[in-house]
Length: 363
Image 1 (cartoon, rainbow, N blue to C red):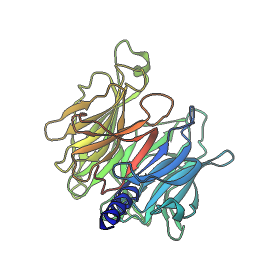
Image 2 (cartoon, one colour; image 1 turned 120 degrees about the horizontal axis):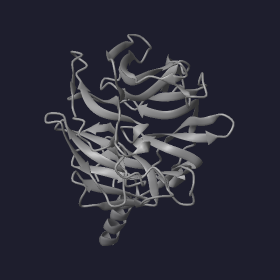
Image 3 (cartoon, helix red, strand yellow; image 1 turned 180 degrees about the vertical axis):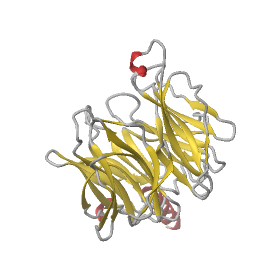
Image 4 (cartoon, rainbow, N blue to C red; image 1 turned 45 degrees about the vertical axis):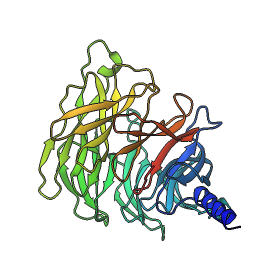
């Protein structure tokens, strides 16, 4: 009898998600041309999955504490609306999602998991640009919103919270003559005060308490013989010390026709995991890779996979990455845990795309 009880307890431990340490992802089944799909939350290793979003959900972002998932719900009339679901311990106890009602194209959770910075979509002043993008803070408990940047005169390009949750960093590209100029890196208080320029050029920030702000700096790429690359911006990386305002370049330009080098997250030793868009081979998904940047040496080390992949999470100890695809129709539709060299691949979830991890992810 005792043996049966122990086996039952072990089985329940395997099947039930562990609070505060989990992943969120989209199912890649039956979605050949869109990013929309059913959303799930699961244990760190992919077991114990529970459904948390409807068929029209996509872009899940799990909170740092693993208790909530923000996601987008497509509406043909209004565009992508921000929603939020409390992660249930079992599927039978699933709570309804909370509609937060903003048109959103990207988002970032606050460090204490109580607020969401939403990059909002608005009308562009010219047909030459895709859209205007602003920035709004949402309190998930009260649904109260604070507009920091109105989506009218430019584009917010990426957003990152300060470790104390009092400020956010973002790229701001102002429209000029129907197009937009390369963005600058700005800081602003979450109450809307204290807006300032942190760097004259910069976008897509990542903020670390120990290592500062990593951000992308745009430069027009010239890649001989590649017409597509000739028309695209290229990004190198810089590091900003928010206490002193000093910046330093973290990468050289010797990336052999790279379209972009966008920071994803810091490792404990100060190196930066980045998304590397490689123009040398435009056949998706091989052209999208991961890379590790060492700001001390300016060395960029690509992490290449035969079937492509990009980072969706970094383990709490900084030794492993969650790698996957953003789209279901091309590439390997599975989430994989790999070491920092791109080896020792372990499948976490099959038929899954566009994932995120809690801060405590330990695969």
